[in-house]
Image 1: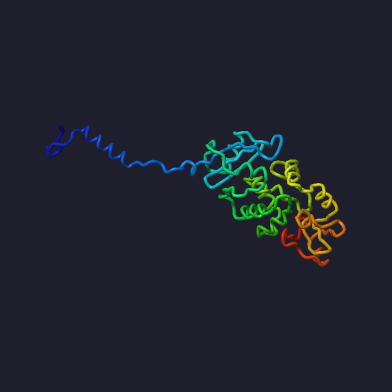
Image 2 (image 1 turned 120 degrees about the horizontal axis):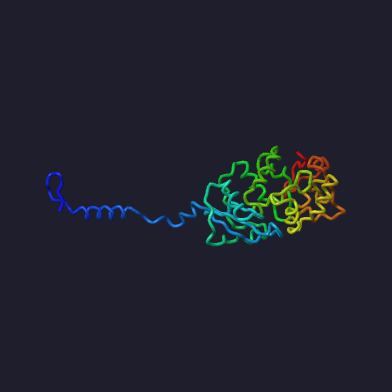
Length: 269
């Protein structure tokens, strides 16, 4: 037995230590379900829509959705690029995110969630605008700038799209230079052309119009002017098609902008 300072008998020292340990253990609790996925991002390899060196797509997603996507990188390169942009550990995924492969193949995210947290207000607005471009159509940087609420920030739009964390899902390949040429792409100009052709964009026709300085086409029967790849523009028969260098010229000729593709002043910045 032990005694306290007054000489009273106390419990055995071993019993006191065991009791304290038991009480401390009782303070603990299991980690909440899904805690790890709220802290770390997950990584998967999936087949993408491009052939050759860009066929293998690596995707990182968080509990909020797909956050980062790149093609043509090995695991180490992808992990380094992810860490340079996001302050999260990157772990192998335990399951494939539902809808990811069809979204990559079709260029239509559908219900697939995207995690775009951490982007600046302008950059997020640019990506939201690019996401509005329908499959099989293209829009110039100037259109994206207008839709993002910054019509004079055409060059900044190009920079923002170049940093797109989720290309293919947010279709920056559908954005072209204001002079009508295809322009650059995060996976290269050849990949951009392949993606557009796979969506049935008349790449050669767009290039020919660009060579002739035609940025918009109108129908002399409806008096409506569109971007050349707009679904309405595709239905204009050659005999009734009129080309314009910019919206000002079309307006001067009595045409009005298409309400679907919403053309604006597409002159080079």
